[in-house]
Length: 248
Image 1 (cartoon, rainbow, N blue to C red):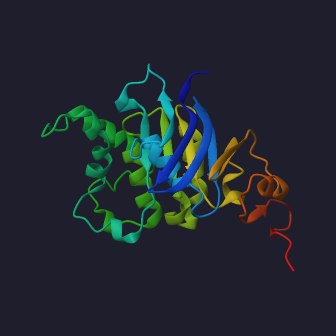
Image 2 (cartoon, rainbow, N blue to C red):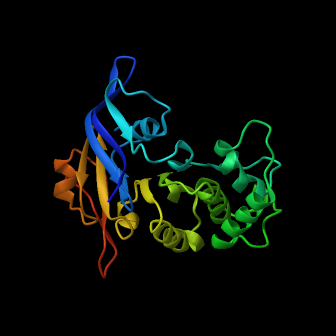
């Protein structure tokens, strides 16, 4: 199995504040990794390093040299209702994901628009291509932005808290789409909802200054504590319930 990228002893700092320290981590083809950890633990910093937005203060990240830059990464950032009030339609948003392959001022071709149409159909957006984002539901907007992230056929899809803006009617369908996409690309998904994503991801990376990789989708409260990830754990079972750390 070919690797997408490898991190070797990567550290990252903001001024004198070290956020990540000595991270060794790699992502291979068809991986589906859930990234979990407390707020301020370094999850966003990890994504910034992968995206090339932040240079490590120590160590290195190395991408597979056989992957063209334009095919490396698709990115679905955190979004809010304030991000959708622009006079732009569904097709144009999806097409914007191809800009990395275009020269400045170059126009989208007929083939590009056909591909955007196929992506819209794949994501259940047929008939909405001319709608503005402000006219769509939360789940539909998430699908549009997912289309923008995947139209360039990336080998790695980065998702930053995708469940934050997904309506309940689309939630199961959204993760079903991710399962299908995982057949042709690796996925790295940051989330606080361990209970939801544990039934979809193949493994976990716990990030709290250091990174601890757990090669399974089954993770216990004791393991989370050992990894230094003091976060809520929701378990599956016949009776829905939540397990919290014992306290006085």
